[in-house]
View 1 (cartoon, rainbow, N blue to C red):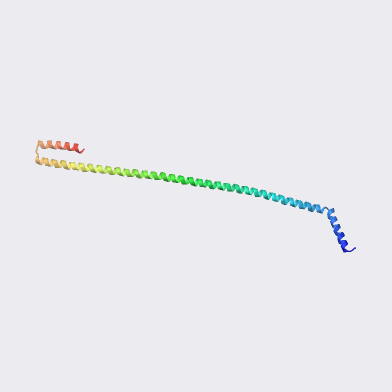
View 2: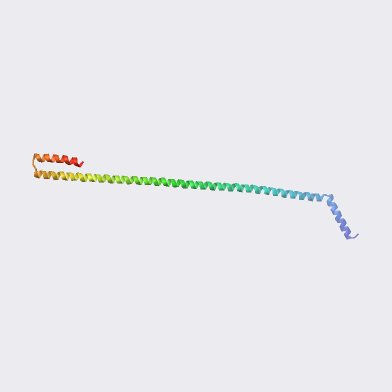
Length: 159
């Protein structure tokens, strides 16, 4: 019995003790537990990844909706601004037209007033000149009658 025999016997005894205390079953159980835990962790990671992808898709959809809504709001604001600008321009044009017409009316009234004043002054000068000429060349009742007739005719022709 040499050393190789004793090493072989000790090895077999060691293996026997391991089987007696069910060490391989414990190792197998521990490895099974570990593999089950790893499988559970992988499943949980897969679920978390799917949830994260769903959340990402949801947030991307919400972002697209928000951008779309913002674009609609901007377009509406532009339309409203253009409409308000058109209304303001129309009101400005109307105000300018009213003021222009008012100025033209005032000018026409001033022209009419000036014409009337010139006409009245011309009538007065003509009446005074006629009165003076008639008074120098015609005398008495005949002069008064001619002046009255001429004044009446002149007033009728000028109005």
